Length: 134
Length: 125
Image (cartoon, rainbow over all chains, first blue to last red; front, side, top):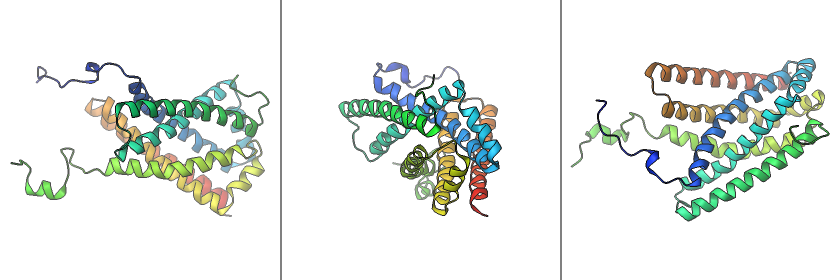
């Protein structure tokens, strides 16, 4: 059984940058799943009372947490933007090679800009004087 | 000549033994999440997040609580479907795959119940 020929797998294709966007959709999706658990933890802290909420917000203000929040923000925003691209594909549109390359570039630029915007506004909503993770 | 049995033709299912339900629900939840997540993120960014009273007051409003409940429910569903596909694609051991599939379901159901419970706790007085 082990000697059966295998159909060609991903390795037979010449690398195209759209491939990394595709795997990034999965990676950011998994990261967003972890972010969802963090969101539920935050909701529970808010429901528990003022002390537990203050403690949760304290936790989220540590440098490591800020770095993680930046990661979750990018993951969510990228998955959101690229998800729209996938939904358009599901209607049968935009599947030509040139179109897929162009929409990929649009998604990357939109995701980076939106991530920066959300982090900037997020810092203000969180009451951080210094924007950014550091 | 088709080798498919009349029953399999009628059921319209592939070799996996199930239809396109998984794929379709992933798209349905994705479409629902576009407005829900956009609304939630925009709302959060306009709120004073450090203020417990303000946050409780915001989440205590009926429509906010309804939309947040929909958000938690739909996020959990979409996330469960997505992680399921990742496990199916990358975990090959039969036992490991079954274990992770169960864990995935338990974690997502628990998170959904906890999130919705938290929202109800803040709304129903």
